[in-house]
Length: 432
Image 1 (tube, one colour):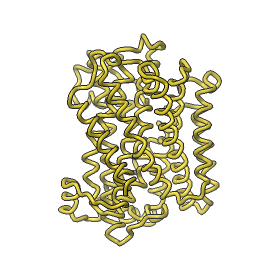
Image 2 (image 1 turned 180 degrees about the vertical axis):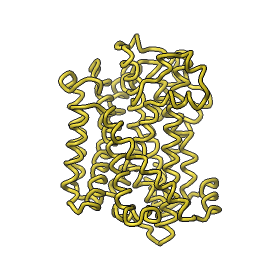
Image 3 (image 1 turned 30 degrees about the vertical axis):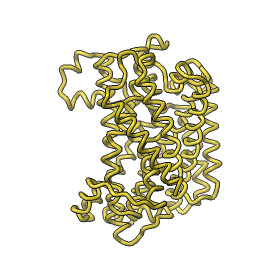
Image 4 (image 1 turned 30 degrees about the horizontal axis):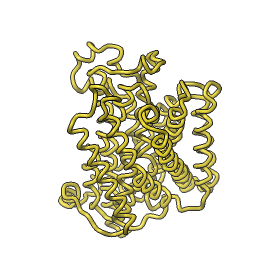
């Protein structure tokens, strides 16, 4: 949502550009979605994975990239071709007995994730300032709400996306620690499975924080917003997309997902090479998680970790709350309600955002260990996501919805593999 795709302003101009120039010209909702994917819950989960199991989970970064990219591209195409968000398409294609349970799954996962992210941001700030976290939790909740209500998500993205670059400190640190690169290669290329409760919980958490329900709804909604910015205010005007526009969306989504998984890979690698190697296998506090950056920044590692957590949280929490609002607005057919409007013109829409943040804030005061809550929010996403993945695959494979723009056989296969993998991991964890 940070910029309007140039292909919608000049298709021929983009055709004349080289590959790299075309990719950068087309960056938009997919890139922001990728940045929001590495939210505090993701950082915590990847840190827990690396600390507890070393390099054993590196393979998940390579596996989840094609899966998450395929699902996110399905969501982008769904929004572009139909002119509606996911909940709006479900409402027109299926009964309310499918629509509202899908929205309920999203709301439960998102609200829990909001509470965990706010708690994680507060814990990190408390670590570096000495001010108790319970003072920072309402501060961040009010700051995010104020920025959404009185400015725009575009401004939030412009301000805080630069803080997410701090996450590349994990990339630098990974090389400074001089890990066992043969062990890294084995961890990345040879999938390792352990039939234990702790291993399956981490696997579900990784899948849930990487392939998250809120990103599905957000991606489709932002594609619709891109069209609205072009003056396409009705569904009929927005319906349909050219091959060049769909290609631009593919560049955007795949770039965002690539950077998201690159950061994921190096967080696991760095925490494995530092915390796991030093015997710190059980992360309970933000301070312990931040120790992974000490080889790069020394005592400033705590500030680096905090800035990265705040940057991703400031991008992630609005996406979590916003996707709740988009889902409810589309399900209830609140026509035109979106973040593009001011609160006075979309009271119900912003009311959902406020409610989601308030309930998340209450959960943030539940007294649960922040790192543990971040990890469990990832697990919640992993358990609740499979039915929504199935819905996305079904909708984007349906000619009555997509016309001739249905999924390719390869995309459909990847979508079903994603649903099966996440379902199998969740069931295995619950059984254990």
